[in-house]
Length: 539
Image (tube, rainbow, N blue to C red):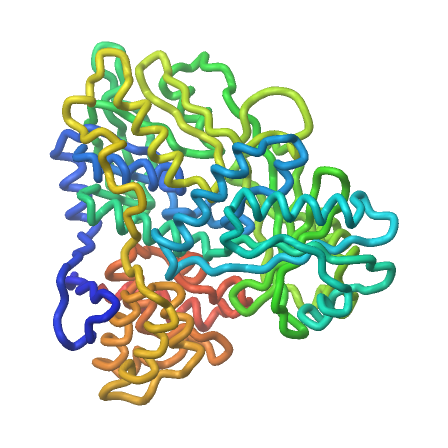
């Protein structure tokens, strides 16, 4: 295992570094987990668990984080890829919620992770006979932008002709006007991985593909967990003063390990998405009202087009969630309200995915339910956290930390720095201006080898920030790592080696689906997968 040198923006990659980062081997991590006693064991490596581990480690607690699958391997990499205020919440009068969401969105996209997020203009088409009129939507996007302090411009109405020039596949029949507003977009898997790294740099110990097989109890209190390494079957345990259940759709499963009679605390809603090749450039995203409450998105993302999402109650095994033919037909039918048929050909679909939203338990239509965070304490003292929105992941981490500080008896309060004293907008690793990083990669990235391609430089800059220079260094030291993984994608083999050694990638899917974009582009062929597995095996 080698040491990863982190080169901040403004420092030449050959001139040394100001910090270092080492990803421990699985055997080393298991040994550490099984011999130490942690203040906090976080079970669940989705963004809620990751954010909590990050904040807890920042506060000075000794933190462990484990997940049965990969980090962000389920719901957290199956989102709509948006950092947004939540335009639809204005309809319910949730003005304060929208303002809070905007605050978090701006913080992430501007101070915390500008290298991983990018602004995105949204066009909200108003058709004759649609669920909302132009005046109402015009006023709505103005109010929405006002709640963001007009940081993304002023929400306004646009002519159909101008909108069609920016989005050639926009249907213009019966199009009366287009409302315009701004939000932000991300690659959710990459954002989650950078947050894992931030947690580790703050002192947390992390291990993916480690399944909890049981909980440890001391005098009736949950004080750790029994685990099994899914890679080689090794069994081990972790001791902790407090255990946090952040397992998302599986939260009640773990609660029943603590208390077999625990009543359900959540319900699940399935959201499906399709990824398609684009037939023309898209300079803006479409947010098309389907009815009074629902909007369907068409988002330019990773050189592709992302369509979705659905919203229906899900009652099966979370491990079985998948996109069905019914989901595909619904997404394409709803997209056809505002998108021309040629862009919606099934032949253009490269990938589909589905995730589960965790909602508070209770009756009612899931599409109208608030994305609230639920924190509960079980009979054995285990805390469970579920729900919330990707946009507010930092806020959720702070919320859980405040809960930890206020627990009866205040068992951790004396050992942790109050959350109010922590940096409010601490950046994620690799923070840099992606345009500057891409420029420097084009100028310096191929030295002494061949010059880096422009699309590869841009891709590295917007997925790794200044850490892209470490990947460029690998490529320059070994020409084989400078080659593309697939001729139709910007990724290079250095990213696969980097994912293996520094980003906890254990399986081909870890690399192809979450560390790179090969799967979503439809390029994870059998030959590519086999070569990736060979690289992963060469440790």
